[in-house]
Image: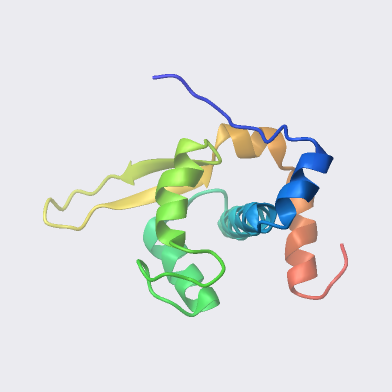
Length: 138
């Protein structure tokens, strides 16, 4: 299968025209929530040493967002599926199975930055994002 990236190429005047119909607002909110969650995930991976288990990532996000895996978040929506499906298929995250010697153990996955995140996001941007979250300056 091929890899495709959709880019919004509508002119600003068309977006302004659509804004009255709430289409632009929905699109803008979706983009903000997508990239907001993506930066949270990338920052956590960077802070934790470039690769983390899904269990650790989801435990952190559950505490940060105040909801459990699989629950709908008012701003991020289905955040666990966004990470597992959209961030991985969009190549922002690389996900692999964590090997275990115990055949009865539940399968966990490891996440690290994917090639698209490496190409589009600098470590300095993530450090600045983390500093702003904590009210510090870089």
